[in-house]
Length: 378
Image 1 (tube, one colour):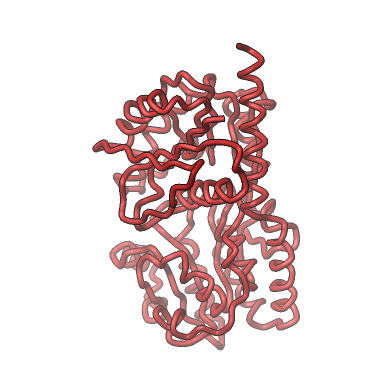
Image 2 (spheres, rainbow, N blue to C red; image 1 turned 30 degrees about the horizontal axis):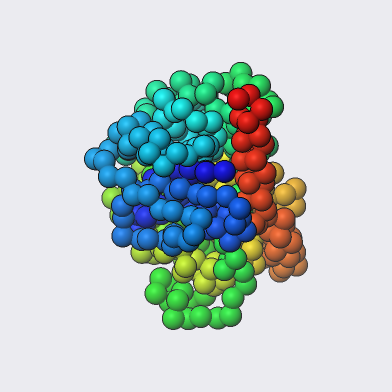
């Protein structure tokens, strides 16, 4: 097979969720599949994280915008390289594609009510593009991949799609996420001492940053330890707004905000943290939840969407709409050593159920099925 994989953003320096997913899928397929030929379509960038091999070719396509790249440059490249199957990995796909199409639809948040307080131009433009593109491409997709049973059922029911075309393939996590030896030179770039709380917050309303910080304020009022909080990927002005709206000035002196944290540093941060907060309102999968568990840090997460499915029934599941529930979980970890040790053990065992190798194996099997169906209809 000649398989095309859309991976537009994987060469950018500051990668995010979907970028990491397709990057790991490509690297695993490159290691395990020598029989098929792959064309990885990317936008030029500074981080050339995929090296070409005999059967894996990197094709750089340059256009000024995401829609133009996907709707014009990508179909032209598919035709030029005689690709026989195209996998679009980031929720959207070309409206016109002459080869069998596989789509990874991570979630359908774009169909859910929009938070009017979200002023991010980038997020709002992406939301609009998905609303315009996705309904028009669904009938063209031979298979629709999503990343949890929760999201699969959501897609089938909300979009009225035949369940036989919607396949759940779990994500994995990178092998360097594991308990690590003390590496002060890594975590001390961000925090002076071990035993802090860690939260990957951002401005997306689904990340529940505001309510989580209210919970942290309550924790500081009740805790005798008052652990500092390390927050990644958030700017000071956004924090100031949350503090002013909620009257939680007591958190300011305890928060450390270094900005973007490279993925390679995260295992050392997880390893030095007392607990990791993953208290989103909604996730289609939640790779950081897996990463934290694999590193042996207790993860306080949510009882909504896919998080109970990925974290398991013994995870620390809280109601993310109640700050007091998140606060209570932190205090219990701090005051009950037996409970703390048990949650570390449970997380380490749960994480073993997931791997990128398994993801790639299921993906390759799906490619074979779609290709076989194409051959039978010709």
